[in-house]
Amino acid sequence: MKAFLQEVSQNPLHQYLWLRSLSYLEYIGYRKMVKTLGSELNSQSYQHLNDEIHHSYMLKEIAEKLRPEERVDFSEHLVQLAENYFQNIDQATENWLIEKLGEKNPFLCYLLVSYLIEKRAMQLYPQYLAIANTKSLKYILQKILKDEKEHLDYLEEVLKDNPVLSYFKDSSTWDFEEECFQKYLKDW
Image (cartoon, rainbow, N blue to C red; front, top):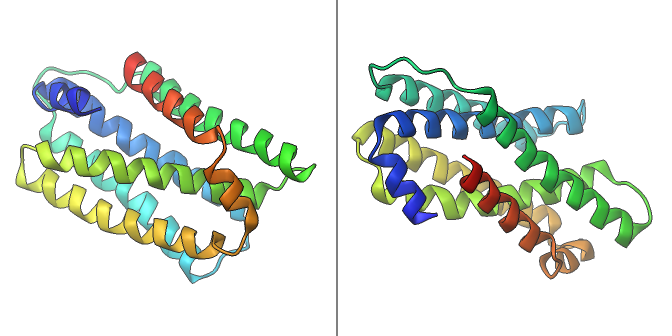
């Protein structure tokens, strides 16, 4: 991941597309939350929703600010890669839950997928921050990191008394997420 991020940060066009990709991933997270939670919102859910859409907005804004002069659009290929990454993790987690519980549990699936994604964010964003090449990008990445840490802490608190989490931490779903993320980077 570090080599990928270094390569991206050295090419203005790639950095623009990478920031747009991150923005879209944050948007997908927001969209999944809205779909799953429906009207079951507490103050933490509202804050998390607000943070996710704000992250998406900030990343898109900094992408546009750093956009190279050559005109390029955010491609359907990159949109589909992001969609596939999320959907594959979501499906694997849902299948794992059905195997363990014998039935679908959309809310628990949402919590576990969010947990996986927040753990990934806590690997990705610090590495990107370490090589970020502008003050404004560093500021945004620091803000996102702070929020993602809070989200992860909240999810761990919610899941701590649920025995499914301890089984989940030992499951092959973690390896599958890693495979999905590596495929995402490779195909990017």
